[in-house]
Length: 159
Image 1: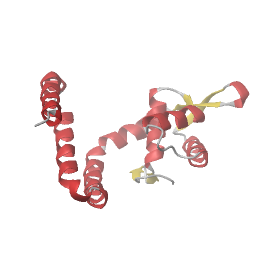
Image 2: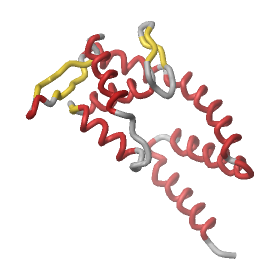
Image 3: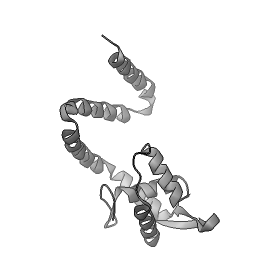
Image 4: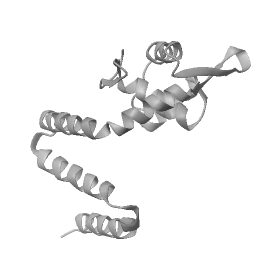
């Protein structure tokens, strides 16, 4: 299966794109075109998978019963919807995310080493700050935001 990172669900390997398709369809039924536009927007217009990647993945997810065609819209446009089986698979993937997070950390270290140049230490500390902030309970969000904004202001301050 095409994708960035392989994840196992029920013995099948899913690429990251397939996982994202399930994730986005879990939020709301969409057409393939809407999904492509959403990915392009989330990647700030710098990347989007091709139609030749997304549509075959949608077909495969449909054949496996993880999504279905909810309606056929104008001009025979398929609107895809996640099935209960797809929700269950997505839920399982989310529960396994801790193991995936560990793998991503390892890959991040390699990526930083390759492209970070002399800035690898900065990238690493920024990632640690991000992880620490995201792991704080929601009741701590105002204090976390205050600390992060102060840090940003201190960094922007000219000496």
